Amino acid sequence: MIDAQVTSQGLKVVLTGRDAWLFALRPRWEIVVPLEHVRKAKVGKPVGLAVKRHSGAKGGTMMAARRTGPTAVIDLDGDPYLRMTLSVPDPQDTVAAITGALRLRNR
Image (cartoon, rainbow, N blue to C red; front, top):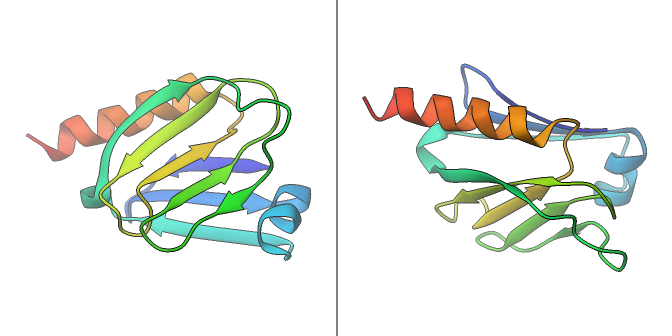
């Protein structure tokens, strides 16, 4: 499972089960990105049949996406990534939560 939530610490992304094994070769993987590093979020297109999981070096792209279904695309300032593309259960709700948190932060 791939999940992304806004918490008091920032944007928390958690991969569990098969998704974590395919991404990081372990049963659970997580990262917390401070909201100060999040630039914007949007609902993205499915990633296609040939795309698997990929993690670039720091400042690169993180992709934890399944082959079909919309994704949440999160642009960061390069710390730890430039962009995260995630197949979360409800991309619209995830993007709305991130956008709402960014609006509150910018007040």
